[in-house]
Length: 224
Image 1 (tube, one colour):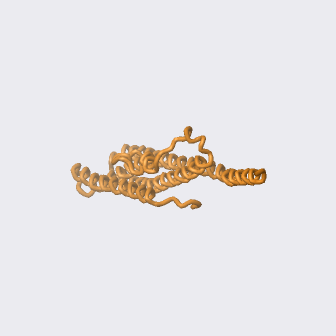
Image 2 (cartoon, rainbow, N blue to C red):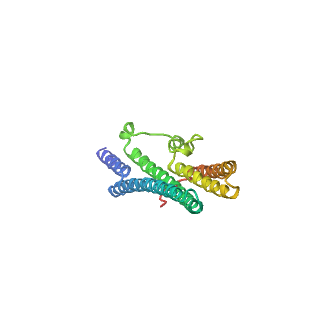
Image 3 (cartoon, rainbow, N blue to C red):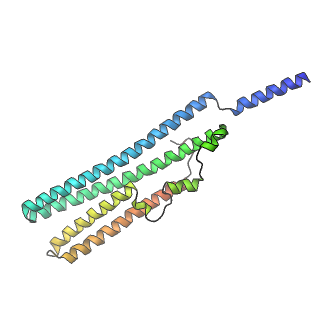
């Protein structure tokens, strides 16, 4: 009997040791968690920086366009400068739209990987479960915009950049129509709307599809 009790004690001890995570694993997971948090902060900072830089470029360009309009009395120099400036700003906006969208998707991927680590913490330290917020995957994606309501796409950084970019593209078309149709206001308004509205719809639709693909793609453990 004493030998049987000693054997059972040893078996329980081994089981407990096997259930507890190794110190190396704990160190790795906490380091990984910290690195992912830093990566998330980097993506957010990049998106904010790109949006601020784009808006500053648009503001400066429009001020310069106004000065040229005043100096040339809306002459040929104004139209020439506008037809160079506005398409350039629209291109910069399109590039920033693409990158801010990529950054937001990367941020969500980092958040999903952090959720995996949290699952490990809760599995090996169940006593902290009452103090940790838990939500189903579908609910987490809903909070992170995947999917969201129809207007949520316009509230993102990429959506804001898309709106400004579409306005710049429409303004370029309006300026060109004014020259082609002998300063016709109707032609300018119609041309601007025909270019701006489809451009905005296309960018927002592209954003929605990108989010849907990112949400549907399974997260592979150990992926870089």
